[in-house]
Image (tube, rainbow, N blue to C red; front, side):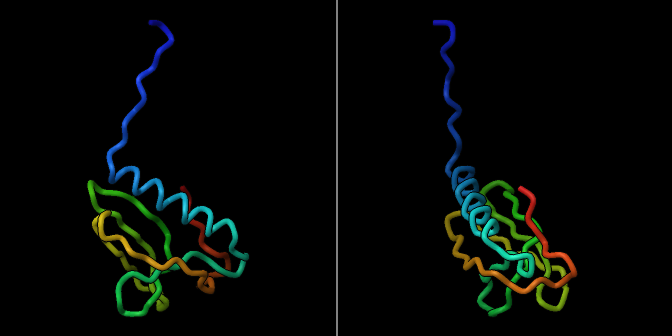
Length: 100
């Protein structure tokens, strides 16, 4: 029986988070140097210029700044995540990239 390994079973929230990260990575890879990842998720019609995405328990947290440079955070339960990922004009000299 040596050489056998037991696969690691990931929870649904972890698998959902990984899938979301992979989609954002693919989107980000196609951006020009003049744009960065933005998301709409808050109903206010204001994009969040994303600096980080993380998971806390069953919550997904998107952190960044709004178009006016104010710190902003969107917190959603993994079962209710519904975001629109968009290319937004960079706010600084160098476009932000989310480090995964």
